[in-house]
Amino acid sequence: MATKTQVLALYRRLLRESQRFPSYNYRTYALQRVKYAFRANSSVEDPQVVGKLMEEGYQTLALINRQVSIGKMYETQRNVIENIPPH
Image (cartoon, rainbow, N blue to C red):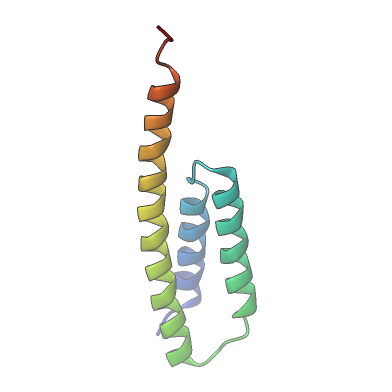
């Protein structure tokens, strides 16, 4: 069973990781979705449901980690291409 401390730690990790998106649109969307999901499920008390939601949260955290990494790779490539002087 997940404790309140574990749920809050996951919430903070999701918010922190969502802040790392290089794109403003992705960043704000991810933050809104995380906040909405936690508010919508704040009244859940069944330990099995909370465990399932925590597992979904960890999967979402892994997804955000991957997407941030991919986004940063393309951000770097775009900066390199934009800094090439014209001939």
